[in-house]
Length: 226
Length: 226
Image 1: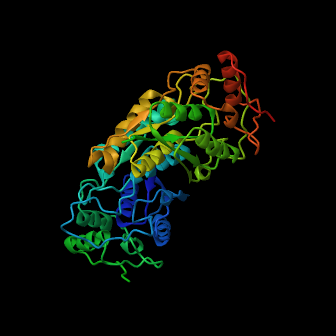
Image 2: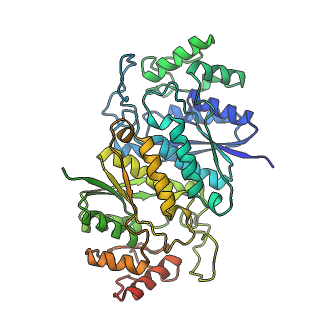
């Protein structure tokens, strides 16, 4: 029987590559996007397109209002997204409290409903940017929690594996891997403040890392800029 | 400085008692209700009233569409809530996949935003009903995850304690504790299929445990039935 995987798919470069990795690992893929009140809808549109192009069997979008908490420039219109600053050592304002914990929890529910054996998340500790929930130690703690908290695991012995195929890769290595696996990066949106056509600002942290990634990978950058 | 706590407040008997326990522990209380597509709004209305009566400083309601996953009779209109069955050893259909994992994750985000040191959840392992995410082992794994996943904990050393004041109490003991702490149980709604005035069906698992609880506690039951 084909094994199933749930893939957290934001519409960005990393999660598109995680989907390709799950397919390469032989899983039937079910992608999940979370509409958490991010500023732009283009990220969610990108997620749909990437899911289809990446050969996922189903795509689901779950709405939840993280913006109601405030505290992040990704969901709070009163906070500006700052330009890339190589000197900065602070956790950026783009940090959304407990975002990966929440996303993984929702993906866990989805995994139990579809009967998935694996959950893929495209976190990377290399371009870590000060997000503590992108580290392998955190992911391991989540896997442990997941296998204590579901009926599938506790009563039926169906354990869930949380996979992080990008955790040790630099942005350039992620792009090289995805290119080898046939990812169409023109469909992906990484920018923190893309316009509604999905065109990038070219100035934020995320744009900076993406641009450098294509450069270091020695591959042409298909990103559309505003 | 007053320490703050976030309390997951469903509007039911258990979480109302957890709020009273947090107040008795000296915390400034911030309550959180999750609108996850449960069948009736009366639970959320009860949560608001319980928060106010329980002396919480703020109350927040977060909307998320768990019903989109299906798989539980609490969110899926096509599945019937079954009557209490003393012989049943199965996990009931009222199980919502990964519900406590999701609720705790959202509460974790809220705790980071308000700067809380504690998070209260009214789980009880005694009337456990086959929900694996009501066990202390699961809660401990979540606390560990929480303190690996937030900037507050990892960068600033502000650890979060997850408190389960009811974990070892029977329903009767919970009611006795809450009564001592001044909880007005007439405001709470436990029924899985309460009507829009918050009146209980008197037949489901949850109604059964609540009714028996008041009886064993030797206290009069203020529940309003349909």
